[in-house]
Length: 443
Image: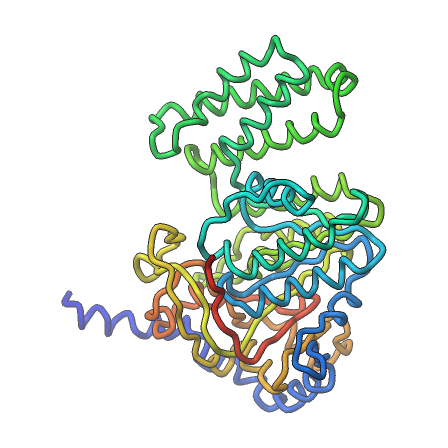
């Protein structure tokens, strides 16, 4: 079949997946009522001078909660600025605060050491290492300067990414607590020094077996090691080995992403929670898709695997407070995707700036339009048994811009690329909305 005929045959199917096909038609008669509730309950998050004022967000999060700061795109400056503003108001409370990022555990451990007075590590320059991240780090470091450790803001990494850095940390721990065993540990972790791409077919199984054996050794010697050395250091070493096993599976084994990635991230959050200081609040900086406390309806009609947020809601109930930070229009930064529909992150591709058109009618963001200033909605306050509540519970298209993009995504109705279909009321407790946004600026 020729390309034009193939395109003509596929076009009806493609259009059926689009968020502007009229799936919202039954709701159109009550749109004024829905828009009215949004206008009445939208809480401004800017002060009289137009500066972000995130006290309403912090007031909506009880002490000791887990706040999911879900960003609908990693490449938006305003969302990063909102994260810093939330960190500032949470840090002003008497309870301690830890901020967890959707990136490498080992890298954020270095940033945590820096904000607590250590040497500044290399940040690089990408969609994560931005001027906004630099501003956050410098603020936290200055905030921590005159505080005791029990009151300092801590940082952590919650993603599945831990290789040579985690291995070196475990080796240093074993050298301190059990020098005779250190040579065996070093030999077991030697394969970590080679890049993942250079490993042979059987290296994954060998490396996984070696790391698992090292973990079993630490468990078997727990009592002796925790008596001889800092007990927290033992738990840190075991946790890094757990992350190493997940990283090996992801890079060299049969890691069923995203199923295991979100599960491991949730386990990581639970690990931080178990070691939290009294009354400590955790703030998670991650994509809205990970933060969502409900599943996504895929274009093929199936459900997505459980998200990190769904795991956390099951474990912690209302103590987990997920928020979707989104926007109407503007620009964002992303890596150029390799091809339409590609799930490759595209980190080796150029980082560019892309325009975002106004959301099509029938999407969640289209209905959020109205108030001209950034605002907060608390979906826990929806009126019970009302048309407004039922609309927020309805599965609809919600903005979901990944780390990779190309302009064709905005033209083709591939809802899973630019939009996620889920129930906002089930997925999120809070919604933070910006009318216009701009891209992050890499360092």
